[in-house]
Image (cartoon, rainbow, N blue to C red; front, side):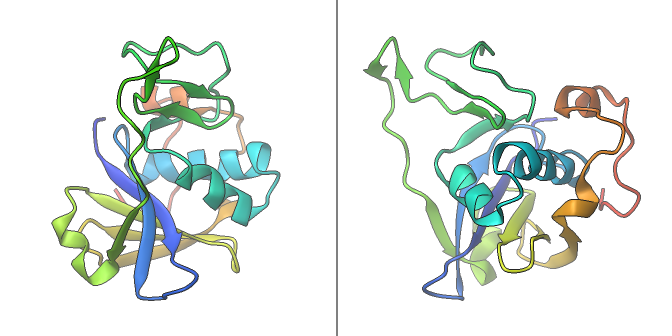
Length: 171
């Protein structure tokens, strides 16, 4: 469950670069694809550019569309972003613990140097998520709308295994 991934988009000013954020928890496609789709549908109101902006705003402990303002974390300084997830620690009681890191920028051809198992690139023009392995190899493309859960299961239920991964999701 502690599979780390990067989620981001191709840099709009340089198509050879990726701008991404780290997600430390549950980075498997069977969790990330439906979670991103749920955040896109509810939080970003199916605006894929808004989804990218939301994801790139923070590094994340985990993404979970069921996060509320009252969601707590076991780690000091992490803050909930309702409808999105829990950020990595940045402040505790209003005091900066660790300043936020800048967005990670890298050429996809050098992705193997990142210590992640999966890379997800959101394409705003096509409303898709392009899935890559940690070395940058492209695996598949998923339209966001097809990744939406039809049974209403949230991220917590998926992590408990009550919902199987999408039939076409890589494992």
